[in-house]
Length: 291
Image (cartoon, rainbow, N blue to C red):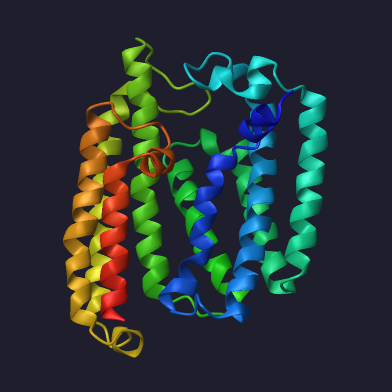
């Protein structure tokens, strides 16, 4: 087994999701201060190890269904490139590394990470089979990363940020399910194995997801008009330009999803999409200007 296969198995590219732990650092404008940045970096690594262990557990549980999937059949365990025994040993090593790293931060952070592991494991074993509940749980797991970043750095995470994150990630989770159902439709299959969704759910999932994305932008707009924003930003009105940017990015992602051009994981699609980088840079510029 090569290093490349190992990195694919632990889904190292998915670690980009753990950058959400740095969000409280940037929203509080403390990213240049080592006493905040170092714990955030350790939290990023510990979350990465924990998440990778769960990915492997999920692959061990879904090995048979993955072998029937158009793309998942190429995953290292499903394809036979990584043995189940080696995968189990890797899970233990990653969990030990995650525990060790989290112990360098605080007991509170360890509890949040343990909660993440429990919820993610519950998702892998059972919750992913429940229609709509799986989407909400996925959104919660993204949002937990933002909350964990606040706990690790001891920076307060506002209720506005939590609310925005939850609706925003519900939209992305819906795109993930929508894309999977589109793949089923193209292959003339009508039901997602072990998921509980059928191809006929496409339109409903689309409506739920786009609505959640618009609500996320609404939460952000309400935040701009709140009294809290003046405590952090010098020119908060500049943040209004963020709303059309967010609306454009979310709407474009859904449009591309309807055209069948979005990978079943929208985060993976975003990190390979040039337009997403342009929107991200513009958003970062607006945040810096407002501050």
